[in-house]
Picture 1 (tube, helix red, strand yellow):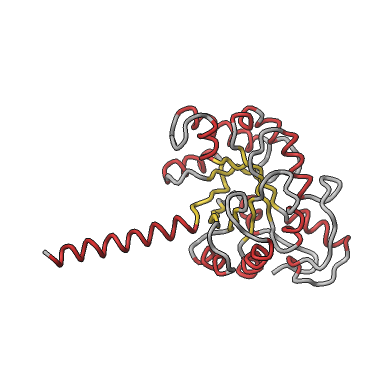
Picture 2: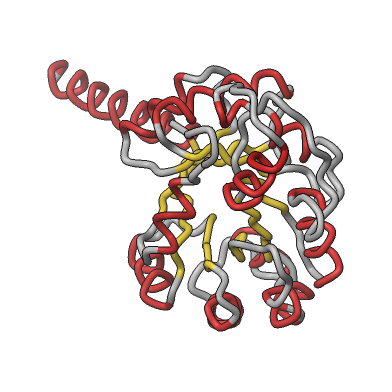
Length: 268
């Protein structure tokens, strides 16, 4: 729980200590229960996806409150670096914003500007912040704590993003450079071809650049354990495991498949 003058983000703390933070993508769940499930299943953050899913702001706020209560970080992937909902999400319990499709340093700066207060950005000051359990706080106390707490994640998903990675990684205010492997491979003309040499080289380049500039490297979309471990060996510390949809489908399919096999055996 945050104290009146701090708002520690557990994921930032973990990654700064060199530990790997694991996140569950959330696309289907519409209640705070998913935060507790993520926590109980060993995740450190949830990655609520409003780029590809239908969430309203109030629902996200409720999920974020549950996440804060059980000690994992609620992050939201917004629609773009210009998403106007960025500040209201941060004002109401979300502790990190994931900005997709960052292809230039200018786009990265626009993303930071949405999420950070002046002088780094242009986020507006509010009051009665959820992260502080709505305690009354002076702006002098709240702004530095929130500035430090907020996680800014920029996703590299295009050929241009890879080409411009040095300039992007140098932008002040970014915490994580996160590779969207599915979109990146598609942009390279090789959708779904995980392990392809060109894709692997692009991912390696982005991880190396992030580390060189003092940013945390992240990778999502590639669910192969051996490749995930290789990304981690190269410096990645922000990893998404899978979506709750995938987890439900995998276990549901396993159970029904095993039961139908057993039924077929019993009928023989």
